[in-house]
Length: 269
Image 1 (cartoon, rainbow, N blue to C red):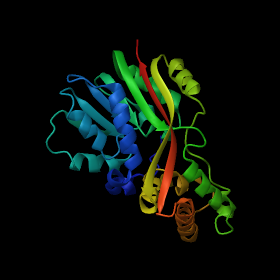
Image 2 (spheres, one colour):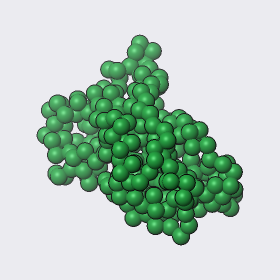
Image 3 (cartoon, one colour):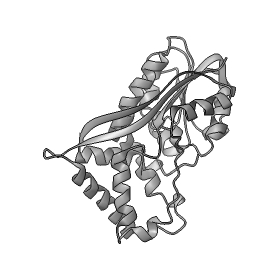
Image 4 (cartoon, one colour):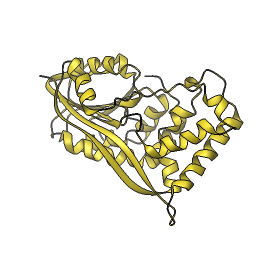
């Protein structure tokens, strides 16, 4: 997994990632972490979920993220939990001195360029009988709202020429059965999976912040273009996304923001 320029987002992510927080609560409920379990938070970002986990268990809780900026923010915001630690680490090269009862992967799985390699590394650091829980956007229509906004980018004369050179960085599968098979291929027993359609009302401003907290790190990342991004392109891109969200809003200025999201719990037998 590349760093995908999350460093600059570290200080705003926790406030903007409203959808991720909601989904994380579902994931943690499904995992039902017990009071003595050791837990790894994979792709922990600024650590707000990691900190919540460390308040549930007395076991060791480790958060890892490829972004130095995210880890610095996580460390600076935790001063009081002795069982909580953080490390800058690429999930594809995951290697730690202890094994874990639980691995949590909240809104990060879609960023892994080599998901099978990540799952193999997760399998190796889980204790026998340990479990991994993943929630992530799924399918090419992961958010109809975002996809519609990006279609404006694809067609608009200000942005279409450069956007031709955008290479999609995300990993999506189209069904829960495909996700299940991926986990089974890596040795896991799948004990729960669901591909959910989720929908929540947000203001235009909130919807744009949610978009910025995740999707923009792909769509406006130089790493995923084969031509140089210009300031004009990035400014036009952002304005067109805002325009698209305004067009999607109702008379009261609210958007029905939809996501397709995979939830999967798997066990190392």
